[in-house]
Length: 276
Image 1 (tube, rainbow, N blue to C red):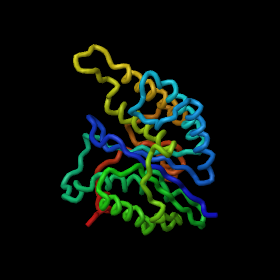
Image 2: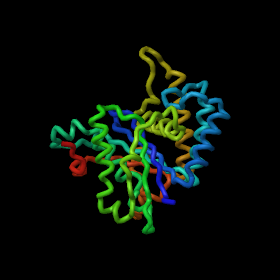
Image 3: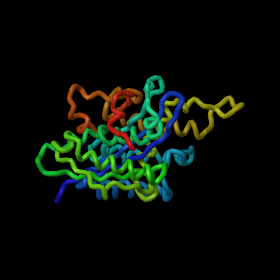
Image 4: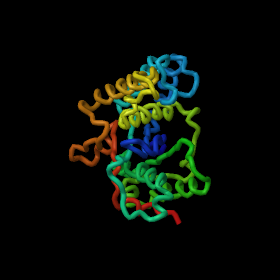
């Protein structure tokens, strides 16, 4: 039976005060997938979280339950049963001399780079046996034509020499859009991604207009972010959420490390994705 990497992808705030263009992914090896989903789904059910879990739904009432669900999720990350990648841009670094197609397709250009590089897939297979990659995107917010063109470009990653050398294969019919309501790992990713954009854009400091104190919901979200960050620092002491995670001079750590952040810097990479 072919080995598979199953990746769930989501995106968050496209324009923040300090950081923008948040993309996230969760990768599970096929041999771990059923058990991993079952564990997280069971934890969610035991917490009576019967509706979709989302960062936007975090309140003081649900804080403890969300923290408990993150305990289950990050225990699996710590065991490397789940790999998490978060990518974003920093507003002080801007791309210059962009052509119109770069601006029109910015969302998909960045998503393409995320899929291509964030998990270090080219270092994920030391054998000569093929590894298939299934990619599930939370519903893409654009026209059907642009979404299908984007999937075509993801499929063409098979032609990239680094993927070919590692025997990484992406089937076109295994690139799909899904509804996060039906996928618990995508829901957990939404919470982690939301926590990162919340803290990096200093939303924990916000107060309602005319108020002298922060809203209870804001305080609850900050507490959940701190709970998540505590878990990340259990894996990497001193982890800096606003910086690209160190490879420690080993490129294979792009794959090996269970949790990583990537601050995407503008450069020449946009030319690799050029819709006509």
